[in-house]
Amino acid sequence: MAEEQAAAQEQQPAFGIEKVYVKDLSLEIPHAPQIFIQREAPQVSIELSNATAQLEEGIYEVVVTVTVTSKIADKTVFLVEVAQAGIFQIRNVPQENIDIILGVTCPNIIFPYARETISDVVTRAGFPPVLLNPVNFEALYAQQKQEQAKANGATTH
Image (tube, rainbow, N blue to C red):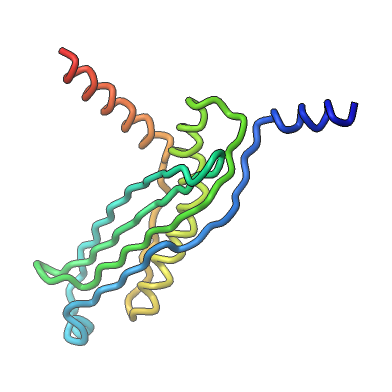
């Protein structure tokens, strides 16, 4: 009976965070120190992407990459990029649910770490902190699926 319970537990869906870490971090201040005496307000742009990879059976890496570029006119004030990653265990979950977990749940877990890293690095570089707004990864996932469906529809006609 104990063996049956153990076997049943092995078949239960499982999700776990194995590790959250900074995979890559870059800061550039190409016009330092002159840029620190500029008085104009910079324009800030943010790019976001995420990628997934299966490391082994039931173990996945998800990487959320955030790039923040600050410019005054055509001069880059700073550029900071962080690739925040996580290793997740996902077992006994249907594939369509794994895609949602990797595209929505995992990035939602990782993003606050990336947000904190960006703010910390920018502050340590001598600039006011950049506070990134929360991201709706569910909406991004849905948009990505729609674009894939359109692309597949366009190639099959």
